[in-house]
Length: 193
Ligand SMILES: [Ca+2]
Image (cartoon, rainbow, N blue to C red; front, top):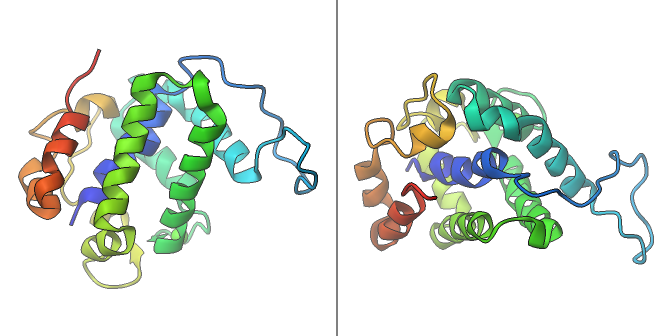
C-alpha cells in the first residue's frame, strides 16, 4: 500500500508547494516555553514548527527538484533522525497539518484547504495504521526512504509535476489499494488552475 507517500506528499509537501500564496498570520519564533494562557493568540508549538517548515520549503518545492523537496520533507518528518518514519511521527504530522490548516484559516485558498481536507479524509478513511503497515515491507516498524518511494519515481522536476505524471506515480497500484476512493484521489491529482 503506497498511498501514504502520495497523500502525505499531496497534503504536506503539496501544502508546502502551494502554501503561503497569501500572507500568513504573523508567526512568532518557536517559543521556549509552552503557551499557558487561553487568552494568548500564539498558536501551538507544532503549528509554529509547521509554518516555519512551509515558509522555508514552500518556495523551493514549487520549482525545485522533487528529490530535494522530498529530502526536506523527510528531514522534517523524521523527528528523531533515525532514518525511518515511525507511525507516531506520521501521526504527529497529520495532527500538526490539521492544526496548521485551522490556524491558517482564510489565509489559505479554498483549493488548498480542499486539497488538504481531501488528503486527510483519504488517510483517515483507509486508516493511517493500515496504510503504514502496507508500506512497511520488512515489518520493521519504521518506513525507510525506499519503502516510501516504492511506487513513485522522483526526479529533477518539481513535486507538483511529478505527482501529476502517470508515468511517475503507479496509479493502478493506488487505485487497487484504496478501492472505491480512487476517483477521489484521481480528482485530487488532476491538474488545477
Ligand atoms: Ca524516525
